[in-house]
Length: 109
Length: 120
Image (cartoon, rainbow over all chains, first blue to last red):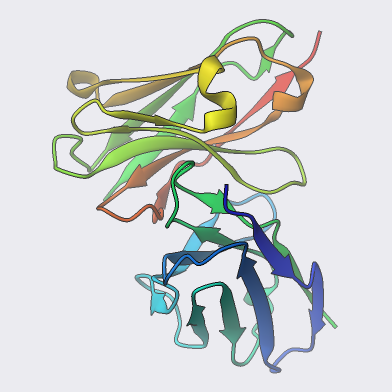
């Protein structure tokens, strides 16, 4: 099973600043990585798939990069609505077909 | 517009079997490569994929839970049903229904989720 490790567990960033979240796979997953945002009490929302393609309606301040084992989600200028938990998910390996990271909590500094 | 909605008990006892239903609209489970599945999230913890059924009735399960899970679909009712046997308190979680639109296994469409508590 592919293990997805996210870092840091918690990230404190000021409004308007840049946030960089990391996700590492225990073995190569090519570009088969997605990022989700989850706010308290809400359903996860797909942000990025294919490591770098924004999902429908996702603002341009969200960008994804990486391939192989190391991936990054960057939020260029944090807005108040961006403070949430972010999960990465690989979909390259079977079994199982997908595994999630443990999440990074993005909080206001 | 695609909608998915989970329904089922909010409380089950240990050792009982959980049955959850996902009722969907705005999507076709007759299209090649698509599927409907389930993901759960224990309170305060990460997401865990459980199972998915394809348009052609092919089933996929989380290997560590495969013996306890069964997923079925009723295309005429626009429903997918997940059963999980031998429930334990560690299975307490919000259970989400998800739609896999194409060949890749990421999910743009989620139900609102239903919290299931396992307790005697």
